[in-house]
Length: 189
Image 1: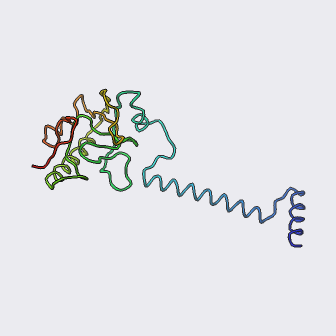
Image 2: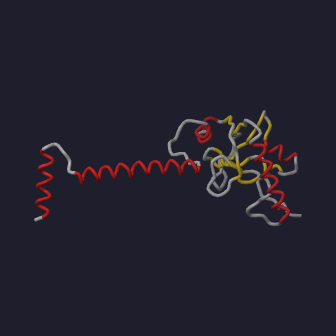
């Protein structure tokens, strides 16, 4: 009986062009929930530095660099820790830039995650910290020099240069890296 009365009231209100108060409250609650959800997601994406709305910028250029060849960039780099993976340095020969994981193709540096001895870990940390300094020192170019496009871990193999000089060469000159020879060699003596 109650359903019939409710249905009759709905019909009466619809015929007059008005919505029942219960429907108005439900729609208002739904709108409020959607707005709160959008606001919360924007705050979370800002805190985690996640791009929700893609745009054509340096990171988009970096993602499409295999078609372009070279990217000139100026970005603020940090160390890759936790969920931060946007513009950061992983170790002495790997960076994340604009969502693209890139390995410096021309060098090999000591490991800091899978190290074999403490001297390798120490030298690896120094190489990572120096690469961070070099990445933040000014504009750089990410260049594809031909050959293999990716390594077995899905990282793009690129040279990172500033003023025509490889940042990898700077690390080699400082004793923090060696020329990549195609195979891993021990850093422990």
